Length: 265
Image 1 (spheres, rainbow, N blue to C red):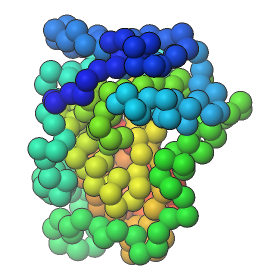
Image 2: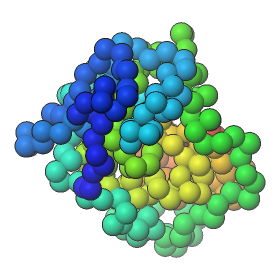
Image 3: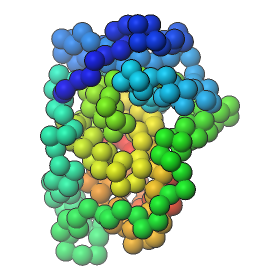
């Protein structure tokens, strides 16, 4: 994957004063010797996401929260594979989703009421969201890092990336490896969701992803159209849940929802 000049080689030279943390360059093939991300040694606190976005962006670094999760696996234990990851801009979001839909829709014959053909990309929501995407991401990050939050204990990280959607590809994240072995193709979809829905990559775990969404669908028809994309992007969101139709998933997980969560088995 194409990379940016990497301020993580020398944060001080980039004008960054980072708290104690860990630089991660551990990869599957052990041939990568470039810092992929930095993450703090201690739990994130409210305000830190916005603070590091302001400080890191001029140096080409974007914030993301990282989660050890149920596997107790922090980034140095993730199966990162940047050498095998392509560039998100080389892929078309609809092509990626169409191929995934065609590969998995037949596994769920009751998923849709139509003939099962790929329905196409959902249109952008008819109503603009009230929040600016990065402001909403900062607000939700504060909620997730507040004392008593179910995700309290997650940590803040910085990644060299051109845009939020590229964060998984920039580090060669392999969380969806059982579904897609080149995460840049999924980052191409995330780019499309950035453009249409104001999405931001907010939390990464070993095999989990959480987005903030500043322009979520506001009608059931919009949400159902988007649900097809979510199924193609992450079939486990439906196959491994009690939401066994696109309509049920749309009503519960998408309609007016400002966070989208994904998990790959």
